[in-house]
Length: 354
Image 1 (tube, rainbow, N blue to C red):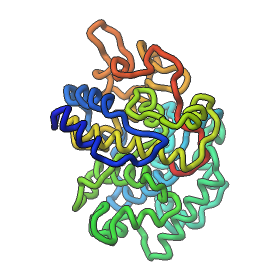
Image 2 (image 1 turned 120 degrees about the vertical axis):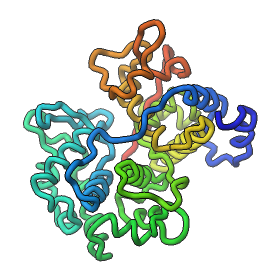
Image 3 (image 1 turned 120 degrees about the horizontal axis):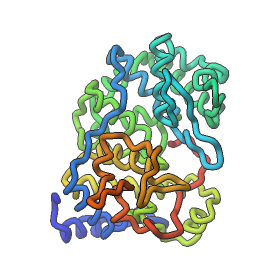
Image 4 (image 1 turned 90 degrees about the horizontal axis):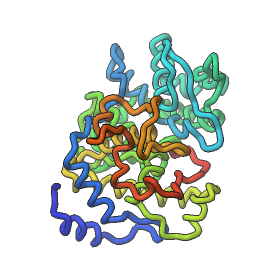
């Protein structure tokens, strides 16, 4: 590990509490950091590298896609899914493949002018599947985000994300202006925890298109899969009994409560990145996100046995293989909820921050 357990504990204990509702559990994080430091963590990358796309097209592709990527598996509703080129895909993977397919057929979909004028019908047709139909939740809210993104860029005479990068001087969060402040002007990217901003910036880094002046300022994007997983492992603890009851009963939380939880998860991720020695929050995000959405599912988590249909990407499977020959969630030996009930779920909240 990068620091001794006592120094790591002291460094976090010295920080003021950010919110009385929820807090990072130092002891659990230290154990998880030690586990991470002893494993080979796969690099952070997408399944497709968008071959044939120019640097400007890649930037606009991700700027659009991340803006609309929230909640593809909303609680109480069927997930976004469908088939593309004979592959059955769900959630983010389906979103990605549908936009990539559409952009290869008609590149104008990557133009801010098109975003500003895009209709609700065009959006729904873009993600409609022949078998499952239109499963894109909150289409009206999503088209508003896309239209706002397009109009805001047109008003600033920005034709591509690369112009935003240039305006920020390649700075993530240092200096003024920077990418965080500029992207936060868009409705889709206004989340105070910067989930979409960090995700977009990580994607641009991983494709090799952007190199940042201050790479240490790239935080970890936190989505609902990661919130669910960290609540179950115990790296984040809910201290407020009323908020805990809401999570347990799966009743709606306020946007402020959701932000508080995700901020604590972000702090835990940053702590784990530093004290595991990895010092790459994006790499940890991809690990947690892939494991939690594949193994730590809402209703049937793979605590001690993965199902034959487990969707964990192949590069993470070695982490899920154990000496006794079993394959299951890599974090089960460290997880406070493995083999125990109740298993908390992510907050039920109406938001487009994800």
